[in-house]
Length: 126
Ligand SMILES: Cc1cc2nc3c(=O)[nH]c(=O)nc-3n(C[C@H](O)[C@H](O)[C@H](O)COP(=O)(O)OP(=O)(O)OC[C@H]3O[C@@H](n4cnc5c(N)ncnc54)[C@H](O)[C@@H]3O)c2cc1C
Image 1 (tube, rainbow, N blue to C red):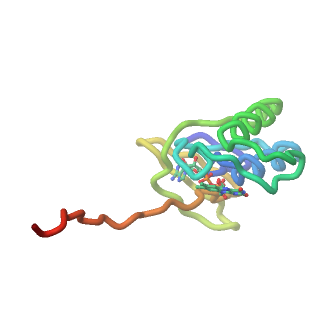
Image 2: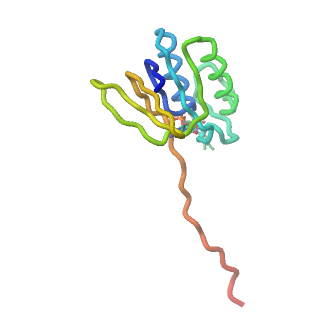
């Protein structure tokens, strides 16, 4: 089982920001991200400091990953975390594809997804 100081589940703006802070405080941080969130849609996000004209979220993610990549203690893995357990006293364990990782800190930054209802479309009655 591999270990890190902190595990972050989710590599969108929230997860990358959390990981950046942890890495800057010299924590060994492991980010798991499958790359399917609100910030992978083609859209421009506004109201972010430093981007007065807004920024496409895919570009924001790219910049965030590059910024995090400057810290040797930070790694990003493209795994779907399917299980997480533990507490602040015992530490946390996360699992994916038969592998386990341990960490003292666990950050869940998985975002939200829309689950749209299925509409049946009928042509007008003749
Ligand atoms: C059309 C549109 C316009 C928007 N406009 C704005 C705007 O103008 N300003 C603004 O601030 N916001 C805007 N938003 C919202 C913004 O995109 C979200 O608030 C932002 O992306 C949330 O970031 P996040 O990191 O919380 O989640 P996400 O961007 O959803 O990222 C979560 C990440 O976690 C990963 N993940 C989830 N579960 C797991 C798991 N179990 N294991 C591994 N990885 C996992 C996903 O693959 C994903 O990459 C807009 C959204 C949409 C759809």
